[in-house]
Image 1 (tube, rainbow over the protein chains, first blue to last red):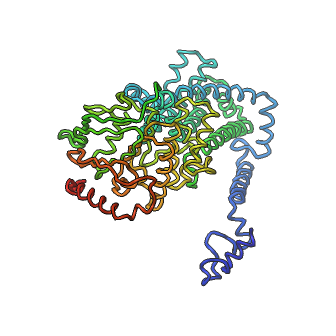
Image 2 (image 1 turned 90 degrees about the horizontal axis):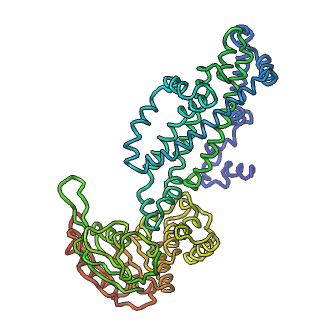
Image 3 (image 1 turned 90 degrees about the vertical axis):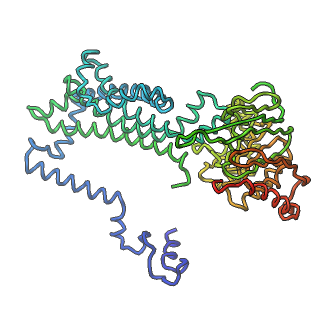
Length: 286
Length: 263
C-alpha cells in the first residue's frame, strides 16, 4: 500500500507525469519522519497536554498548595475520594442526575414533537417555553424547595428544569422543518396518524433531537451541581466544602476532574449516537 | 381497505383554485375538467408546466380535495389517499434514512403485511426494477435513475389497481429516461394496471400511452383527447418513426396555440 503511494507520488504512475518531482499536496510522503509525526493529532495532543501538566506542577510548587495542589497530591486525592466515601456521595448525585435527565427527555421529546407538528400546541406552549428557557433557573430553586422540600425529588426536579428546554426547542424545530414532500409522500401511502410520527417525523428530525439531547445534558450537569450548592448536599456540597477552610484543594481538584470525566464520557456516548443516526440520512456524502 | 377497486377512473367536472401569493383573488388551476378511462389503460396527461396536470393527479389520488366536482374510482368517490393507488413522484421522495429495501417496504408496512411476506414481496419488485444487489443502499448512494426505480418499486409493491406517475422521469438524464420508459412498459405489459402518467414531454407521452389527454394552461382545461395509434409491444424503433414525428408536431401545434409567455 505504502510503496504504491510512493510510486504515485514519484510521478511515474501519476496522471500529471510532466512534473514528476512534485509531491501531491497533503500526502506528506516526502516529509521527514519527525515532521510526519507532528501531523499526528495524538502526538500533537500529547505534547500540548503534557506541557499543561508540566506547567501545572511548576505552578503548584512555586505558589504552594493553598493555590494549587501538586500532581502527586492530586493523584493521592483521587484515592482518598474513594476511601473516605466521598465517591459514594458523588454516585448518589449522579443517580439524581440520571433520573432527572431521563424525566426531562420523556417530557421534552413528545412536547417538542407536538409543538413542531401542531400550530395550536405551539401557540399555547411557546410563550412558556421561551420565557423559562431564558430565565436563570437558579432564581426558581426556592419555588421547588417550597414545593417538594430538599430531598431526592428537589435535586431531580432541578435537573429536569435545567435540562428540559433544549430538547423541546430542538425537537420542535426539527419536526417543523420536516420536508413537505416527505409528508405528502407518506400521506399518499396511507400512513396512519400515529405512524406519521413514529415513521416520518421522528426519524426525519432525529439529528435535531439528538443535538438537543446533547445540549440538554450539558444543562443537566450544571443543574445538578447548582441544586446541591443551594442545599449543602451531595457532590455540589463537597465542592463547596473542599474549597472552604480547612482548604482541601487536593480533594477539590480530583472531584472536579471526576465530574468532568463523567460528563465527557456521556457526551461522547451521545456524540456516538448522533453519528449513528447521521449516516442513514447522509450516507455517501462523506 | 374495503373491496378491491377496479381500475376504471372517472373525473367529473373538477374545479380547483389556489389563493394567489399577493392577495388579489384566486388563481384558477383547473377549470371544469372531465374525462374517463377504462381499467388497464395507460393514459398520459400532457401540457405545459403550470397547466395543473400535477394538481389534477393529486386530486385523483385524494391528496388534495377539489373545490367542486368529483373523482370516481371503480364507481366510488375518492376522499382520501389509499393504497389502491400507487404514486410515483417527480423528485422520487424516498425516505433518506431508509435503505432501498426499507423504502420499498414502506407502503407494505402501512398495509399491515407481515414481516416475512413483506420482505418477500419487496424483494420481488426490487428484482422487477433491476435493483437486485442494492437492497442495503441508502437513496443518497444511488443515481437519480436508480432512485426513481426505487420510487416505482415502492409504488407497485402494494399492488395498486392504479398507478399515478407525476413526471416520474423528468429529473433524470435523457438516456436513463429512455431506459426507464422501456422498463416501465415491460412492467406494465405484465401487470396491465391502469396508469395515469403526467408529462410535458410529448414524445414520452406518445411512446408510452394508449391515450393522450392534452391540457392547456390558464384557464386550464382539456383541449383534446387522442387515441395513440401505435400497437404494442412498443420498441425503440418507434421513437424515430415518421408517424411519431407527425403526431408530435400535431400535438405541439395544439399546445403552442394555447401557450403563453408565462407558461
